[in-house]
Each structure stands twice: as C-alpha cells, then as structure tokens.
Length: 321
Image 1 (cartoon, helix red, strand yellow):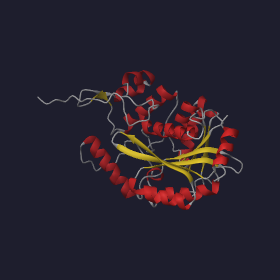
Image 2 (tube, helix red, strand yellow):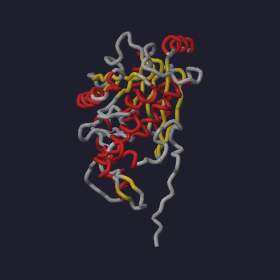
Image 3 (spheres, one colour):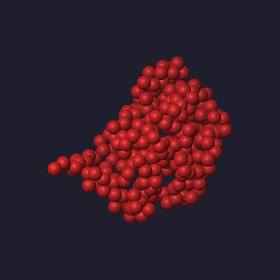
Image 4 (cartoon, helix red, strand yellow):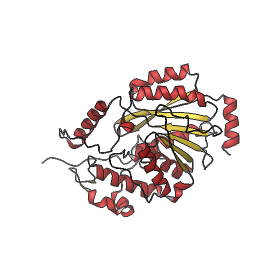
C-alpha cells in the first residue's frame, strides 16, 4: 500500500525569524478570521487540509485571511487578473530591510510614522505598505504606473482605518521614471523597496506561468490562468529585471541626498554581476546583497546608498529619534 503521508517542516527555516508565517498555516484559525476561506480548504493527496494553489480564487481567499488575521486588514480586494502575491515572501523583504536600517542605528530597528518607505510599483494589492505599517509603524508612499493599480491600492488604504494616516498612493505618470514626480523636492525617504517585473517579454511570462501551473497540477494545461494573477506591467518589461534595476540605479543617484537607503529585489542570479558593476560605476556606498529564500525559491535583496558616513549619522540623529 502506498504511503501518502508527508513529513512537514515545523519551522520554515528559510524565512526570516520574525516572519509571522514561518510555520505552517493554521487553516482553522484562518477560517475563524475569514470564513470565506472555508469552501476552498480540502484534503490533499497527503490527507492534509490545504487549498488548491492553482486556483486563483483560493489563493485570493487565503491572502485575505492572512491579511485579516496577522495584519488586521478588514477590507482587502484586488481587480480581476491583478497580482495576488505570496504574503510570506513579502513579509520577509520588510523584515530584512528593517534589519538593514537597524545596522545603521546601533542594532535598533527604527520604528514609527517618521520612518518613510517608498514602494516602487506598489501594485493593486498594497501588501508591502500593509506589512510595514503593521510590523514597524512606518509611513509609506506607494507608487505605480498603472492607474487601475493606483485606484485599487487607494481603495484598500481608504477602507482600512489603520492605513489612512500612514499610506499615500501616487501615480507615476512617466513610465520610465522611478523617483521623479513621486518624491517631492523637500521630501526625505528613509528606504525604498521594489519588486521588479521579472520577465523581458509577454511570451516569457506566459511560458513561466505554464511551467508553474504544470508543477502545481502535474498536468499539461494550455489554458493560461495565473494563480497569483499579474498584469503585463507587473510581470514583464522591455529588458526584464536587469534593465529595470540598472535604470533604477542610474536614477537613484539623482536622489542621493533625498533617500537614506535604496533597495530592490533581484530574483535572477545571473543579474547580480551587472547590478554590482552598475553600483560601482555610480559610486554607491554600503552596497550589500542580502540572501532571501522561500520554499525552493532563492532570491536576494540589493541595498545601497550615496550618503557618506557622516551624512548617515546626521540623518539618523535628526530623523530616527
């Protein structure tokens, strides 16, 4: 008789130790928080309660439950077809960035509304601001080139009292810019974050989606239904992740005195060398690569600054009290 049992990791050791999602989901508690999740919870082939991660509706319900239980978000919704991101990975980025700031503050994570974070490409889901405001009390600017994403994220902020005074959603009208027209002339930003479009073309994005769905369902399905969603602007751009990040680095130098620390996710190992070279050519300081992992996927965060050591000390003493 086949053994369909499966041993589960008690602690997801690849996630940050402060990540609230570093143990298996307690689906009963999640259903108590968000009853609409219940219809999607079923026994899998290992006789465990789970959801079908190839089902976009199930993934959206799970995210709604996680945001309700762990971050006290009562009203969260995204337009059909828009990115429904895995919450644990998003939380990991925020916690690692908090540590990067703490390294400049004698090991203490700077907290409170005076710490301002810019999320470049906030998306319709607004997840990074939700986690950052909840975990560390930071203020957020969320920018996006897509008016529908801006409208959806603004609605999430408007419909959740805890976000209203902490999160500002701004439309980036110039699609090739990152910081221009988003950071105002006298505005100071403590940290920028970004999850760049991964792919270089729509065809590449479709191929990747097919592969992920085949792995989830173990079926060769020609129908493209993205379980986590994602519009073109969210999933791909000309030149892909590499060009996107290199362009961001070039523009970041123009904001060298307005931003304490810049950062971005970098998913592809093959892009690290080009990014490090670009940062060296831009005379960036304090460049670090922070490894990050979720499940079988490995990624990394690149952080950099243009402030001298004395400028950083002045910044910290003036803003991080």
